[in-house]
Length: 151
Image: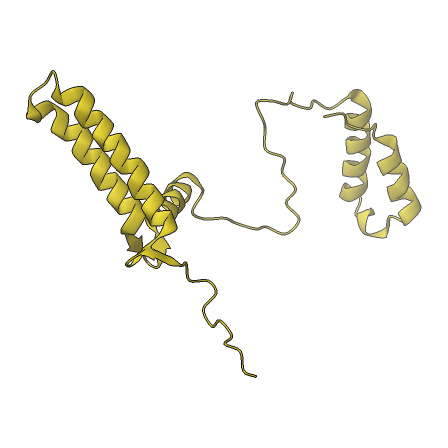
């Protein structure tokens, strides 16, 4: 006995003609919102006033439901466009750079006298060109001398 194996499982099922359930729900929500604007505004205002919110809502609903740009839905395309404009366009990676960027939420760290003293020792050793011959025990002593930083 042979069975049919579904080939395109990512394709949404069509409910009414070429319209999927998702598109039908979007059209129903947007259409009801447009109709609500029409009912509330058409009673008291001329058509020049109520046509703007009704038309904007209808056009936005149709574009969200049916328009695809670069094989992306309209909402996903708009969200990606917003993310693209908000994030940095160029990013640089520099080996060994461990810069901590200042934050509004955190206090700036100021060096204690002990840390300045240790930095001075390191600087003098580097000036004497002994920095290349420092052994692991000396490095561990220097690192152990720093107090733990609370953030």
